[in-house]
Amino acid sequence: MKVTWIGHASLLIEGSIRIMVDPFIEANPSATVKKEDIPRLDVIAITHDHEDHISDAFDLAKRDNAVVVAMHEIAVKAGEQGITAEGMNIGGTVEVKGAKFTMVLAVHSSYSGHPCGYVITLDGKRIYHAGDTGLTRDMEIIGELYTPDISFLPIGSRYTMDIVQAAKAVEYTKTKKVVPIHYNTWPPIQAAPEEFKKLVGNKAEVIILKPGQSYEL
Ligand code: NI
Ligand code: MN
Image (cartoon, rainbow, N blue to C red; front, side, top):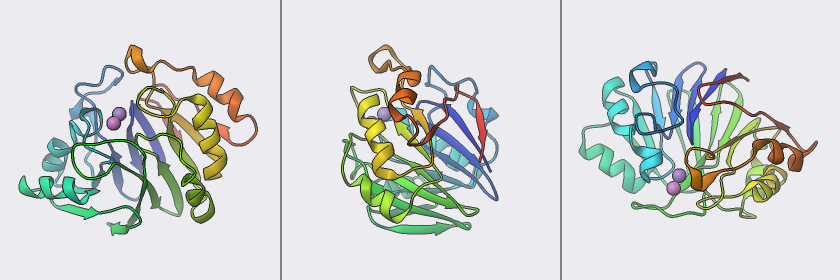
């Protein structure tokens, strides 16, 4: 399985199916690709409807006839645009095209419904995308129940966790590998991933990607 960090919170997961989380490409200053470079998608998972997470989601869903997985209120909006959407809520799991999406808590805000993260199970691997969130002890639940193979955690501060909190989230989630995201897209969310790596120490393998870079899982 290959995971590609498009930049910011945008993630492309390619295994037996192709999944994108939080497509933010055209208006993303850190993206190295264009929307047309994104290969055909099977599922698009949305963590919340802030612009930097949802801006290209509905367009790509229409282009590829992809299924949108989202919080109920966002799924309703997708449905109104003719998109096939699987609405759900925190605690729930939906299976789409062989992949499982478990919606987990994110402590943040949104225009519609509640923001969330996902534990995605694909081809026997568990991938945690935290969405935008502050640190919460509820992340211990993810560690106890899911023990992710790889986690994507925001470190940029201001709108989400900073590097100290994200290092604590690594501990809580018992993740084996971690990729820092949601930083250095704009000046207000500057962060030092190397410092994050030091704070995590030997608790997990920290994989620092450049936007557009992939990791083979
Ligand atoms: Ni947000
Ligand atoms: Mn955000």
